[in-house]
Image 1 (cartoon, rainbow, N blue to C red):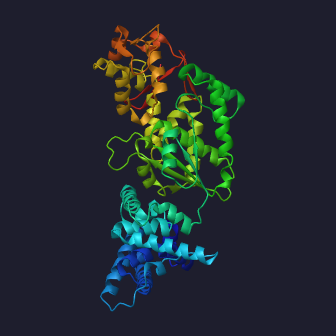
Image 2: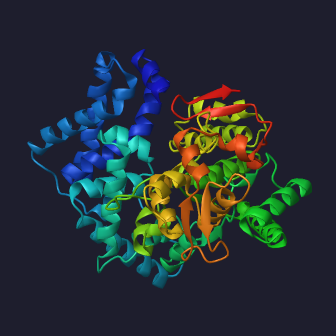
Image 3: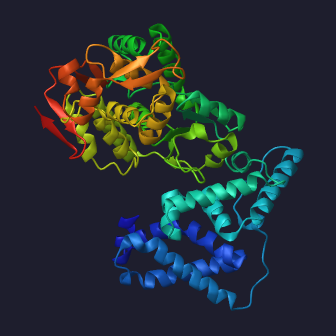
Length: 510
């Protein structure tokens, strides 16, 4: 849009037309919210465009056009409010609604549901009502609305959350998005891809519209390959996960085949929505799926993403599994469309993550990752898992030792505290238990794990003398124990010639 605005400043009539088409719906929604009259609204919007283009040369930054134009629209509205108003029509007459088809009974029922929906919306405060109209009725993206209204995306999301809550508890509308989709989008077939069974079950309890595909993988753990469906590669990964996490290899392979068959049928849906979080667990999964979709012919199917790193009222947000069904449903409809930029970035990150070259992994941290705003922090933590030049420990082992030295002896309490400090990893209990057992195995044990065959909540840990000396930097764990570990495409062995300096965020070759 910036390009059209710049060309319109030069007097290009076609560019002028494109700008009008893009911003007219937004301007109409804002003006109607102030005037409540479709005739006055139309006049005010027309006058606003005339004023805007008469003064367009004065606008130095085209990116500022949305907020600048909104002020002009509001000013025109105030001028009209001082004049004599014409007879106002109800909102149901002002909002464009598709023509009904079908029998008389269906038409009457549909009309009643529309009136109920619109009546429920009228009970919202003006700022919430405006957000709902622009996002749901006009179809503008969160980024576009944020720019136009001059508020951040997080503020806008909060307004949509609040609006959904108010409408959810209303006696008139029990589920705004479901009713809206049925009335205005004809119940568009949707596929929701989520990161775990907990979230999937809660969405089902919330009666979200569409099918749910739970993607069961742990890409931060073990070997990962650019093409994950090769027989040799899949067997390699299955054997690793069975050896380290105790996941039966045949069960893993069967699950991979089942979920791949399910996603191959994505073209029967008009919308695919991916529900993911900020941590490394989810960001690796997201990049894999973006890479997969980038290689498909999408046809008429639209790909969307809902990715969050916080939620109103939750101080330490660790994942969507913390949310209730009702809270998850407030997120429904707030996703954003995935475009070429997101697909290309996801593919590039996945290719780097599955590379055997450490330089490719570090390159992720140097990319422009703004299209996937949580990627940089997540993959910075991926790098932090690698051996340090100080003592050979990764961030996970370093944190566990530090907590144990601070006096935490219960392995389950240790897991909880580590999860708070390293929540951006998204580490589950299976991986944690594997790391703990590796750290307590001889030779080179850093910990003594009492009752290693007991359950996680019953075992206790304590530091060994070597653990204390490694933690202080007197000893190097890799030199004492060696290493044979897989992180994505990396295979770390005792011949590894580099370390990752977490403080300086740089590779150190030894």
